[in-house]
Length: 233
Image (tube, rainbow, N blue to C red; front, side, top):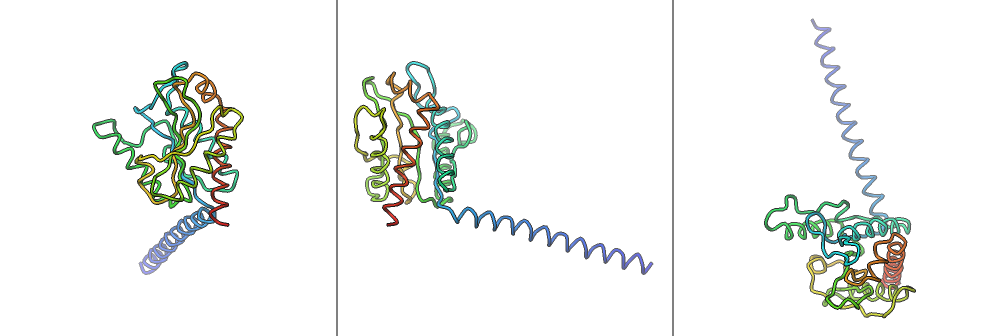
């Protein structure tokens, strides 16, 4: 009887050691991953719209803005990661961030994006969108920033300048002030990049192609690197 008692005590002790070892291993892995993440600058990429909110629609192809935003955001993520950044997507899938599509879904969606941004403590935030305007001749990329944020204004200026240098740019633009939730929800340098007008046939023809999306992503990355280099010099 005494032997079985000692055996149960020994087994119990081993079980405790196993739990401690597993807990330590999980914690060590989590700490290691956190350390790896924090050793790189964090960039949040926000693919606008999603789910039942498709945004605007291309006049020729009927392509939803939300689909282009997601595709371009994924390309942009690869570009930033290849440059050594740690990237967090607010909307990594086609779904929205609102849960169920009931009343107030848009507000819930935006609040979730704000949570992701603030929890990430990023070096910068890039929200990807596509534009639309009644006058179909309007075209080209346009960057927006929060009025009272100097870093956001500078980031927008650098990205806009990079977009203006693209061969496809038919008219150079200045970065503009914008009073939008995603720009106002945090103190981190944040911009909205309207990559082109889906109300313009020429812009839409470009925007639905992977080749042009890669060019846009490259220009956004170039402007972002220029901003970060200026800020840290």
